Image 1 (cartoon, helix red, strand yellow):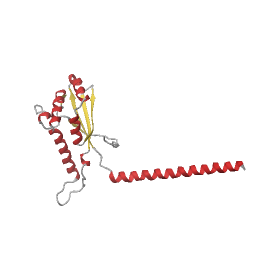
Image 2 (cartoon, rainbow, N blue to C red; image 1 turned 120 degrees about the vertical axis):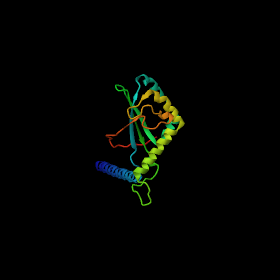
Image 3 (cartoon, rainbow, N blue to C red; image 1 turned 60 degrees about the vertical axis):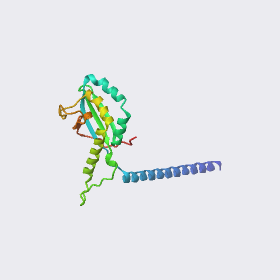
Image 4 (cartoon, helix red, strand yellow; image 1 turned 30 degrees about the vertical axis):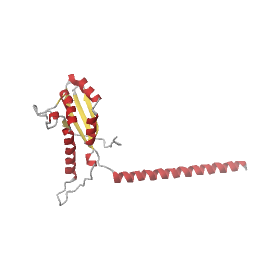
Length: 195
């Protein structure tokens, strides 16, 4: 009788364990589905990615890295206010070339429709372009950012897209100081979150 009693208890425990595992699996599956449903409703468009290149004067490498070891808080704040995230600069020593990359999320700040209505409202791409230009103008007009640029510019040598003799960006000059790069490939994964 003792054996059948312990078999009964063992069977009962196994049944409870299997039932609990099934219940937990259902809960987890349900939670994942809720998260998928929520993310598909609240999903934002992909961040827009931008890249640039510029030469670094070899004799200015140490100065440039010292500057970027302590980027001014006001510059970082302005970049964030202009919806720039994940700003990164890479250096290629053989060619003394700097490569920059950033993601822009300014189009997340407003609902952008994808149609042009009869009232002349802008379509999504045109509205997004205006938002981007507005953010970049705010960045380039910021006096602290311009002062920061005045320290960086002597370290850099723009490629041919910059018209020689033009005013530096820190002095209000227009144009692309950094040569724009075309994105040829992206893996498609999104950043998890921006802090």
